[in-house]
Amino acid sequence: MTSQHQEQAAARGLLRAVSQSIGYDVAAVWGRAIAAVPRARFLPDRVWLLHGDAYDVCDRRDAPERWLASAYADAPVVTQINDGREPDDPADAWPSCSASAPSIVIAMLDALDLTAGTRVLEIGTGTGWNAALLAHRLGDANVVTVEVDPALAARARSTLASLGYAPTVVCGDGRLGWAPGQAYDRVVATCSVRRIPPAWIAQTRTGGTILAPWDSPWICGGLVQLTVGDDGSAAGRYSPDSAFMLMRTQRPDLLLFRDVVHDDHQPTESVTTLDPWSVADAGVETQFALGLRLGDLWYAWHHDPEVDGVATRLWVATTDGTSWAAVDWDGTEDAGRYTVWQHGPRRPWDEVEAAYQWWLDNGRPGPCRFGLTVRPDGEHRAWLDTTTNSWPLR
Ligand SMILES: C[S@@+](CC[C@H](N)C(=O)[O-])C[C@H]1O[C@@H](n2cnc3c(N)ncnc32)[C@H](O)[C@@H]1O
Image 1 (cartoon, rainbow, N blue to C red):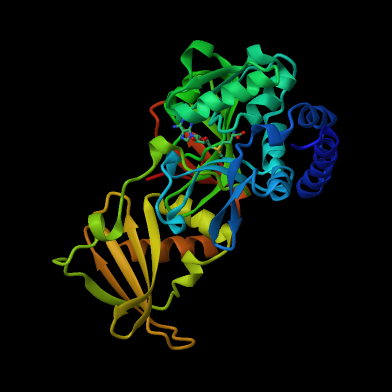
Image 2: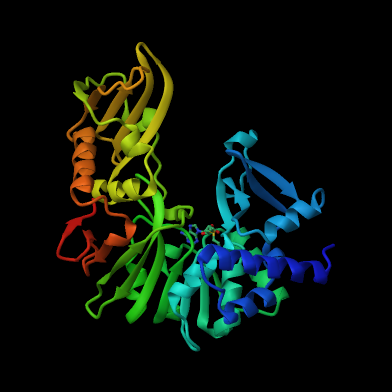
């Protein structure tokens, strides 16, 4: 069992690490909250820690020191994999719940700009740690948190209660918000979204804000913070950082060789000079912009595809599965030319080339230059610099 002394020392170390990561001292109000709601108490005995590219089980009973170090490191700790249905092969594990990295938790809480009496709706209760920090700061009555997974919701509720907190924990689809608690001053999601659910806008008071991690089919990353208008619209800007798991109820169910590419397709052939790595293995700045410009395009790499003369193939497809492109690299250094195959009513690779050229022509903008407007009818429009320079998000 961990001693209180050990825990307090670890929590102080965590505060220093978070301050270093966010670039300023953690506000005293959050320092007190972190001390009052120790992160370790919210973690289950069994967690998964990233080891190289794979997840490694860490059980508190077998490795108490490693487990405790993970609780107080400024890194995410995976607390559930595969929606709670553990795979036979550990290599197939993917995270479905985690305690987010403390520095992103604190940065998001700061971005919410909370004052006494602010009413907050959190989407994605997870372990309950963030809800506890909110409840510590605002009081139970001002915090509602929604979790889609019944086992996680129950566990969070009981952990919160064990520390004397009782915010409203709702088990349900966070896409619907929680109408009985409206109107909220803030909605904060801790799972990412591809679209802002209409309920979040409807349940936020005019002038209130919505803060959500962003996911495009091209890349997961960025935060969007929107202010709700009196006409039922919401608009605001993106900031970089953060990659959160996608909201379960917005997850696509699409497999390349099951749903998109079929043997009887007869793609057209062309040549490109744009190397596939420039768009699909590029930095966040490039890929974030492409994600907003391309809307419904996604990609997958295929190394050694067992096709004559092809060392690596990049697949690009529409999320409705009707159109695809494949770009082939023949394995020669400085190839400069790549064969392109395209099928369907759209020409995905032509769209990628156009989007990349747009990004270059506009001075290679990073996430902070982009914004999002959600119109009262639900249409999502992304924009560069100003709302007048906008396009519909497909
Ligand atoms: C990164 S974790 C949240 C971390 C959490 N805030 C904490 O303090 O531990 C994301 C959570 O979002 C939940 N989630 C995913 N889809 C959801 C949905 N449609 N409605 C509510 N919660 C959802 C997941 O089950 C997961 O627990």
